[in-house]
Image (cartoon, rainbow, N blue to C red):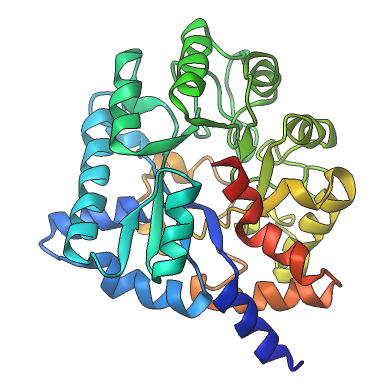
Length: 340
């Protein structure tokens, strides 16, 4: 079969889920400026070109809004998504479980599963967790790369700070309540101390929605071998991340082959059933990031995949490495589908 035909077959018949995308920040800002149908206009064509069915839509709060504005900004983003779905009901839908995801695929819609990227909107009020659950949040990213009431984040490069800690007492309550409600715990951006606390506290499969292998690039944002084995032992999934600063070192030219090296490494270490994609494509969003948050990154990130419309390149890369169709389908979405 010709390569182009094979790629089209995969895109047309496989459930493809990106486990991490920060589009809601952009959508909310664009809507505040008076635009409507932002996703249909700016994102839908790229999603369809790349064969994407499901987006794990991250609710990310820039540090410039913390702490006072965290809850309001999070609700603004959720509201923006609901309004977008109402404006484009033939193209978009909210997903809360695997059945919804399969329905989105069958109906040709793009499904969005909400995720908190850091517990800042909850503050220290555990009762707010149920509010976000009722709004559709099903993935609980405990921290971004900074400290909050739950625990400490893993910085992209070393910074001057005091002693790091693990999961706080409030964090323990939040993890237990989130799992009881039906939220998946996400350890991407969490520091090592907190990670091992989560392994002890959590009772259900956990994920690292957008992290790579530390053995291939030694940054705290990536996972050690033992951490990846621990996630797999709980039945969880790790999503490979296409942001250049956690794909390869600064003096290297991060590229698609190096990203797939992370996939190869993980598959050899924990098996094909525990790897997905959480591409974290963010070239479009850095215009919104504060100087404080940008300063924590060793260089301006750029994506080794040029947008969701070019996912065919990733599929070709998987096939060129010898992955069978069944295994490619697991990585592209089936493994994350199992979790939710």
